[in-house]
Length: 281
Image (cartoon, rainbow, N blue to C red; front, side, top):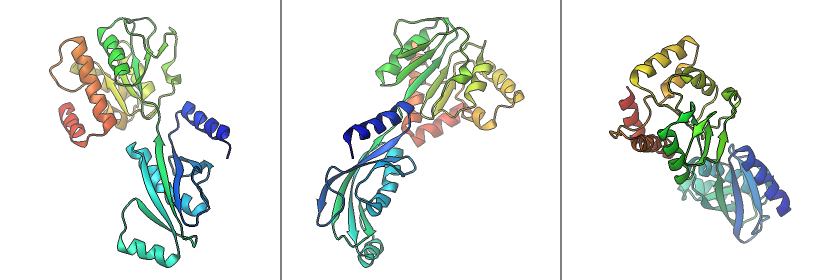
């Protein structure tokens, strides 16, 4: 395996926003085809994209681990025991620890493998309507502070804080924007383009979509979305009115409530999400 090729493969996946796991052999005991330093890149489905950790047996063992670390975001060290069929079955029957994996092969060795996740970059996508908007400005600042790649789609924003990316073409067609599953999208279109923007976003499945609007405007927008055939699933996932109910009044407080709600979605806090659903009912 060439390091330059490995780096190129990883860089390409990162550029495309595709999550993957990197498995590295860090230690061996006894006989093993894999040696310390062997590496393999695995897809979110657990399939080998590039490299090897020493053959089909250990690679089949780490497929589920790769999917696990990509789900949790936490790296993991596992010990893969290259055992005979009899010993491998016995280990399963006796219920060994989750980080001890037994595969059926007669090598007789043990491999320690470090599996680390490389996840899509989390992006905060803010869709504005132009002009001065203190909530928009505060969201850019908070988003960057919290480590998001902040993208603003707004033809004429007035911002004190510079986003990572600004799309300001007056005739930009938002339906052409490539939304990702890990995106948090905040719509600040103030009624003028709510339905148009939300309908375009509904063609994708971002992690979070929120609309800053009064309850009356939300009802009107939802009725129009339903008339235009937007899926019930998208409408039920739409956070509107947006943000946690913390009694926010100032633009900065509203931005904090929005980022708090986005954080709950990102961290998948079940109890918080349940409370959010109750609030929106």
